[in-house]
Length: 491
Image (tube, rainbow, N blue to C red):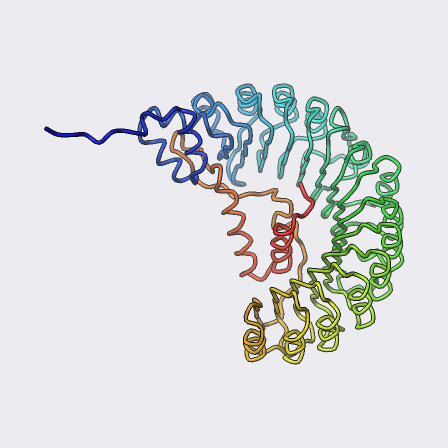
């Protein structure tokens, strides 16, 4: 008599099997979906996140795809630049079948027009997060989203090519999203200031990020404090903004995180005003772009008025021992410090940090005049230090780094003393806020399917490591890791 082993899995309820699938990687889920028709059905119904190759031929697969994946709430549609993307018909059809969609990511969907966005907005009124990049629809399509999606919390827009009318561009927002929007991120917009009404009309806005958007932004920033009272995080990168804009932002008393990256018209005067008023400041990133408009005076003001400072990043800034000593003495919670591309940071400054920064846990030094003597100072200072990264400091040798490791076995020391490279603190290129996640392949239901539920985190991590190795975004990569490990206030 032949005894067959009992099939315990067949006795599992569908709900339990769905929980098992949700704990698997995207590749494993794909394999499981091919086992039998029951597993295929359960895997599809339990998948809430989907990433698709949004080429034009996706239109013919939409009915089949969303019959199987009928519980999707997070959708990414990405098309290669050289391919023809889906158009209005496909987007409308998708929105009709995904009325519970809460997150949408559009990348290079150039055939989608204002009409397609209007149809989508009317069907997916529960949308909470929209991220679009390199698309061709314009102000009407964006306003359709804002006027129909009353629960929208996060909006990220990059290279929206449909807005090209200069001063005559149609104003955007705020619509029904005025009360719900908490994060706005604008990147590389030629007419980004047409989003001004949206920014100043989002009364509960907490995070504002502006990257490489042309025009005079002082005008918009001046109005913000009168209309938006809860701003906690502000990123300004490669903008035409001056001390006038910083003066306005200094009245945002809830401000905790400020990034000033390549804004050469911002000086010690503006930073001082911010420091004097924004006493809750926790994280400050400054890329001075070697303009020398921000230095000791501004940093001393930060030290005197911002005792809660936890993270300080200085790139292309020339602090001296005077300001560093004041920061160390007045900011007892300073845990993360990065000094990059400075002509004034040498062994004396590192020795000062080692002696004074008792709470410091992570230190990054790049392209500074530091030698092995500075490493010896770190061996006996900063009792809470757990990680040191030294990049492009020619005075620091392998022997110095090894000596530091031997002196403090629990300290992680990363040394790269290669040739000096171009400094770039452009955190936005690496996806600061996680706007562009990688897309991997999914079950072969149709040739245009990609990406799954857990692939994004691994892909993003891989990109971060790749950026570190390539030398382009080493500082940004390091800081993203710090932030993710320390509860950064982001979307």
